[in-house]
Length: 79
Image (cartoon, rainbow, N blue to C red; front, side, top):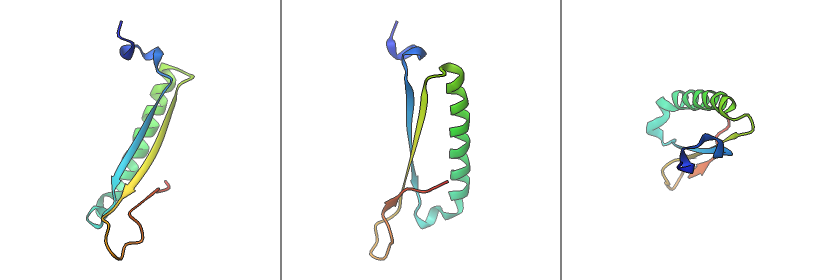
């Protein structure tokens, strides 16, 4: 059997969400945050069912346009 198809071979999953936080995305940020929260919660529960010793690790990178007056190009956003 192909080892990539066997769930018991996985120790966990790492997921990184990359989010466009440019000004044009402002109306959508709350929906993006709630969707990411839902994805995390749903997948943590699924992994626990599949393998109790497995882990899901999540990271978030947000980015915006690099312009002369901006206060950052990328940063971590707390939930």
